[in-house]
Image 1: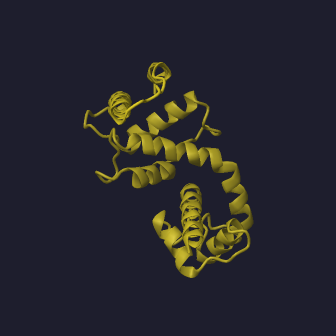
Image 2 (image 1 turned 90 degrees about the vertical axis):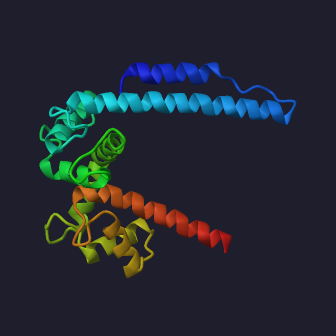
Length: 208
């Protein structure tokens, strides 16, 4: 996204100090104003995303297919020094991004989905050294997938040595579309799914 968007948003936020209130009416008016500015920022942000998709939408379909998304991801992430290898992103990685982010139309992403695709890619490339270490340790048959027993061992390690149930392991694998085995690109999301599950479980225990 352009620097102008973030600069403008920062100026707007910085210009709006939180005033003191002497009545509920003033507080309500302030909160209404805050919501107005948030809505304006959200609309500006979406316009930036829409323009980004439009720039790479070679066939003018309103969506990005695999080839278009690959070019966008490559140029966008190279400009931000996210990538580590010239082959980024591979066709398999793009296929995963389309599957994970493309909710409205199979094998495509639109302006409302491109931010998720970029976030997923950034998370993946940021975690890639860790992912490689995990595969080196747990992918003992070198299948390039973590199958059920291997994922269970890995999640046990993430869970500080406490073994998750078979149902929990299957739920994580299914959530990332890796029921038959979790690939490298799926593992980054699997980490997030597991940590979210663990936090939820701890919250339930705290309530109990």
